[in-house]
Image (cartoon, rainbow, N blue to C red; front, side, top):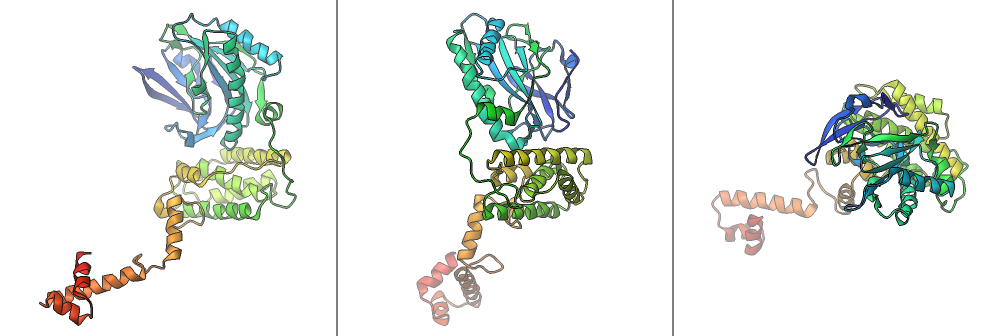
Length: 400
């Protein structure tokens, strides 16, 4: 079967093997090329249709590129095995009725059917839209359960980090081979075309015609401008040592810059190259260019669609870049809820260099005086008299 080649040169596809109900990671590939023959006839091999910015971590926060929509159809326990072409026929009827786009590929998983729709140039910035379309496809396909009583459309398989069986491998549950039943290689979709065709649009708002790309308020402009400064600060705080975070930083920096500047993709590339120079080990220029082009396409699509841009939360950025509490104290706006409250409290109650409020500083000073007098042999009663305090207050100071 040779090489299963996906369309992107960024990110890692993870390959794992199920052994005694445990998932063991056995490989990660970048660029995205999987040699299926290497795993041919091996048992219970899975792969991630979507890719990650880490060859090790497979959590949602590390997603990088979205390559495919997919639906997993299994047979219900205790029922006869699925007639795979019966399932394909039901899916094709949905296509005929214009309920769903024509699938790119049908995979016989050994105990069911996986249905795929390949998509081009879909960055993680479009995850919200990806999930909307994925859920739409799931709900449409789930309807065939009424027609084929022994099947179950698996909701868990709508997760963008999902592992699915690799074609050419063996399903150990019944020793059946996982294989491609039908593949239409020309069926590669644009996610915005799918949105237009199948997702009910939100209410449009007035298109912003200023030099701000499409963000409608001054507050959002200020937010994104401050974030750009924070990305620079993170690199500086780490003395340029950002290996493992370079692709995320490049994507976030170029995206936020493009949001608030109406510039060409060439200008965006040059500006991002300057940011890249601050890294101890700069990001590969070829990959930087690919990210900038993807960012530019995304912003242009949002402009044309008159919809709000994808907004990264502070939580997402903090987790993606592993920003420490200490680092957050040096940033303008990429801060956690705890840091936000700390700053509010700091403004509310002024503190000295030791972080003490005026009252705390006064008590500390009193305690020093009390201990000095006690060291001179004075009784607590005499200390209270000397400092013009009550005996009870002296006792409380010593307890703190």
